[in-house]
Image (cartoon, rainbow, N blue to C red):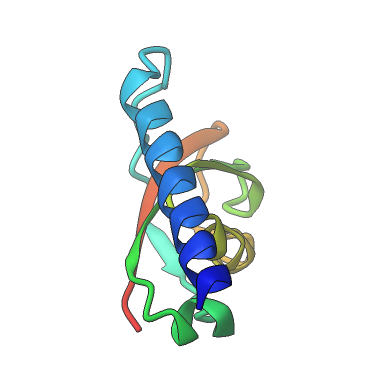
Length: 111
């Protein structure tokens, strides 16, 4: 029981620190809002499910001109949920464009 309380405390503090970083980042480019053609649903992590952990993960995705995701940079959210979000978004496909863009994406996780 003590270990679980410690884990919850660590996750809570990590989440607070991650979200604080989002609010302080003034140099973040505005999202380009390209049309999404194919979306992969993230796999809800088993540990997060056992903890009944819900939350929002914010990431920036760098999208190539052909619509493929080149990189995913986490901006905030629970460390238990960020990897699931990154794995799913890496498989997304956006509409083609003449230039590379950065997309702000928010994924909401509910057990």
